Every structure is written in C-alpha cells, then in structure tokens.
Image (cartoon, rainbow, N blue to C red; front, side):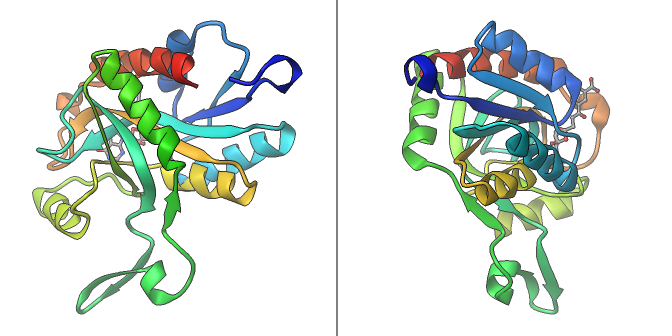
Length: 219
Ligand SMILES: O=C(O)c1cccc(C(=O)CC[C@H]2O[C@@H](n3cnc4c(=O)[nH]cnc43)[C@H](O)[C@@H]2O)c1
C-alpha cells in the first residue's frame, strides 16, 4: 500500500452485479478499490474496463468473478489465481487442430500477469486457510458445455485451471493503458456437460467474498 496522496488505486471488474456485491462485501470500506460491473463476455468487459481506465487513474486492474474449473485441477468452491490470462478461442480452426493468433502471427492471445504479485496473493489466500491454486485462466466467448469440448480444451491447455468469459477482455484493456492486471476467480462449476442446476453459485460467491477480504489485506 502506498501512503497519503499516493495511495494505490485498484479497479476490480466483475461481469454481473452478484459478483460485484460479493467483492464489495469482502473488501468492506476501503477507498482504494473501485468495483464495477463490466458485463458478460470479453467485448463488454474490455469496453467497460477501457471506459473506467479513461475516466480515472488506476495502478492495478483485477478481473474477479466466478468460473468453471477443470476437473482434477480446480475444485468447486476453490479459488483460481491466474498465472496468465489466455483467450482460448482466439485463432483459427485447421485440419490439424486449433491454431492460436500467436501461431498465426496476429498478436497474442496471452496477457502476462505480475508473477510476484500473483504469487503473493496465492500465498495470502493459503495463509487464510482458503483452497487456492495458481495457473492459466482461460477466456472463452462460449461456455464449454460438453465432455468432448472440455477434454479437448484440457488436452490443448494442460496447465489451465479454469475458464470464464471476461479475463482476456479486461486484460487487453489494462495492457493497452499500461496498467498491470490480475484475474482471481472462484469455481462455481466443473467444466463439462452443461447442467446449470448443478452450479454452486452461492458457494462460489461466498468464496469470492472471502477471497476479496484477503485481497484487501495483501494489496
Ligand atoms: O444466477 C445467478 O444468481 C448468478 C450469480 C452470479 C453469477 C452468475 C453468472 O452466470 C455469471 C456468469 C459468469 O460466470 C463465469 N462462468 C462461470 N462458470 C463458467 C464456465 O463454466 N465457463 C465459462 N464462464 C463461466 C463467466 O465469466 C460468466 O460471465 C449467475
């Protein structure tokens, strides 16, 4: 934390109001944080983040919310801290499989995060007794809804912990503004066959509140 006039300013971008409210409850009254609802999907998230960054100065952007977890890598109720933010469907389908924009030579589908900070956040969550893992978090415009797609994604991204729909949008807006970015999510469902009735949204929002309380302490 910086002192006095130079206090660090942190923008937290969620996709829906329920996530914003969970984050706000966890953060309590802390004027360093501004929490916004950016909307669902990478385009809405990028536009909302870019607008907020144009209106005020921020030192750090955090994409926060709930997510799907890869089975065996991030269990329902646990926290995922991104080691990098990866747009998993930005590229081209070819007869030999998926080809990312990086391979196509059109930029990058990956946005790095400040590694030391992400590690510090993960350690703080561990110290608070919260179940947490660190690894790539994928951004997809379409929620994975079959076992086949989940397996193909898990095979193509063996390090990935989780998927959601906004991280890359938030991250490219932050990157364009020269502001570091983190993504922190809590797992509401296993990635796989669609069964929204099985999503543990309440549990994931409670975890998001607890994770946000730790963020307040560690940042
Ligand atoms: O219905 C509700 O009460 C409710 C409360 C909070 C959030 C929601 C959402 O539906 C949030 C959508 C948001 O969640 C992310 N997400 C969650 N699971 C997955 C997934 O398996 N694959 C991709 N994205 C997932 C995503 O970022 C959405 O924006 C509902």
